[in-house]
Amino acid sequence: SPVAEGLTIPGQMNYVGKAANIYKLGYELHGSINVINRFLSIGYLYNNIRQKGGAYGMVSQFDMRTGVLRTTSYRDPNLVKTLAVYDGIADHLRNINLSDTELTQAIVGGIGQADNHMLPDAKGVAATRNTLTGYTDEARQRIRTEMLETTTAHFRALGEAIAEFKSAGVPVILGPSENIDEAVAELGLKLQIHKVL
Image 1 (tube, one colour):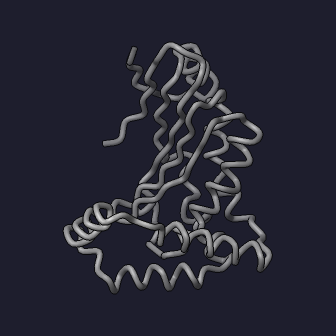
Image 2 (tube, helix red, strand yellow):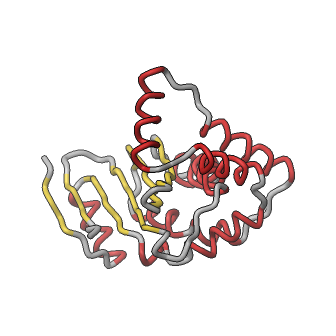
Image 3 (cartoon, helix red, strand yellow):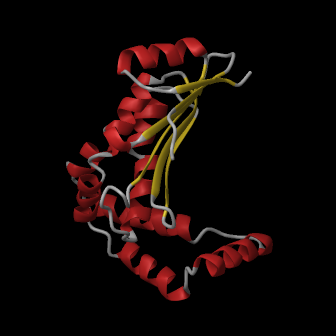
């Protein structure tokens, strides 16, 4: 089962992650999640964790096979604030208003990421993975069609579906022990603490 962990290292920066199986929260797969995830990474997360928070980078990723939604930051001067940003994802999506232009840009970005260029070895790995997991051409086409049909309502529906991400999500933090201790005290986190270095 997932374990909330704090991994202590010497240094000043944190690497902050939080993940949950959103299939278990009631989410049913729809291709729009690929559009929304990229939108979160270059919008909400970028603005709050990188621009405002000063982290070197951050991303939201979703694994269609397992249902795991994970958010991560790296070289992050914050810890408590970053976890608060993750916990705000559901509310952000539930209350989002997108113009037609913003929605089109989000769809184009999602499709561009799904259809990124691959060298022959990467194509072979992808084909093998798809065969082993039963991800057929028909299923891939359905996902792409749903991506192209994404609406603002899909953003809001995902927000409703992951409303429990805040409580159900499992944090894993890599950083200096004093930062992890502060997060444990401030947020009441129950972490298994391990000294890495």
